[in-house]
Length: 447
Image (cartoon, rainbow, N blue to C red; front, side):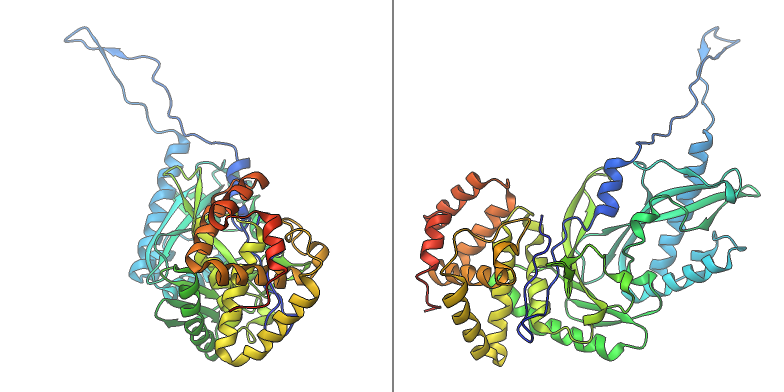
């Protein structure tokens, strides 16, 4: 699991990165795993009437159950809301929102405006049938809170819609189903730690080819700056990884809820994370697959984040769909390698050289094992990132980018097994971990 694995930066030795959180979809996946499977079954037909003319039974059609009627009413609302966002019709988006719940209508109006700014090319909502509806008597006898999956694809950024979980409460009023609340679901405790940027107040966006930066209203200048820094970072990522997302969403909000508190690095809040995007792997949404990443910048770092930090996170994003079983030293070392190559090209060659020399003289000689997964800092503390960088730099210098990319792809598939990793290392490098450690101790920098 790629947690606690982001490096120190170039501007400051103490600047921390964020993890590539494969648990970032706990809001979705944990719920799916723990939820009661809820199937809607209509009333069974227990009999039929004889046909007077033919004397043979005639099948009767059972009436929709209360659950089926509720789901049908909810589905109409959800389809209308999705269509309203895509077409820009606010009255349609609000038409089924409880007119008595003024705060809900205000929240929805703001969410609508924010979603329009993002520019979705596809948007659908579907009730998650893997989650049992919860009775909400405070909204009347028909009140039910349901888990809803919002599937949104941002134009020019996403190649497929990304799933976001929502908790909506619906109730029947005067024969009509209404959306009456959005925070009653018991699982809202899962959602309270992290919120999407469009839920955190008015936003502004900055667009560049393949980049969309989301910032709070009033911070347009910082959004434009981050967009430019993103453009400066992307070529380094593409050159090294030979791959990149079609587009990248960068989130730099002021609200602390834009960062999950579990996104930490070495016990400290991460400066940024490449948070995975998930999409249903089947129509029933019982399984999910990784379809890319978005980069979330810690609110405290949003005015400081630069191309180096972004290059590191963009590298994680580029590699994210390959799998999550690559060893941490390779995952972080690869991102460090891309970041520091960019630093060299950005006028910090001397700093990078000094950093390398220090590691080669002090951190590499006592190396016995590679930085350990799960406790990445381990005995090496902050040097884990530096050691991992030197390892990857050595591999690129000795074997080339093509081989290192192939090694990463094979290790990312897993399984996370020492014997298998040894086999993969031998396949691509003709040596195992012990021989790699011995080789790195003789390394004195790139040729």
